[in-house]
Length: 64
Image (cartoon, rainbow, N blue to C red):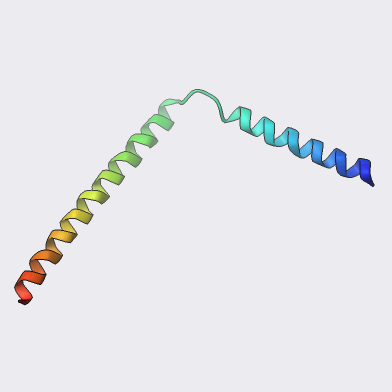
């Protein structure tokens, strides 16, 4: 039983190491485009949030 558990742990460790090493490949054009899209969406979200804050400020001013 003890050797079985050691074998399972060894196999799992090898799978984790293999998966980790396969993730270290060079970034391709799809990954680069995806990162640019993510950055653009994040910037757009920040601008929308700022605009929403300005609308709230204006609405507070109108209520007074």
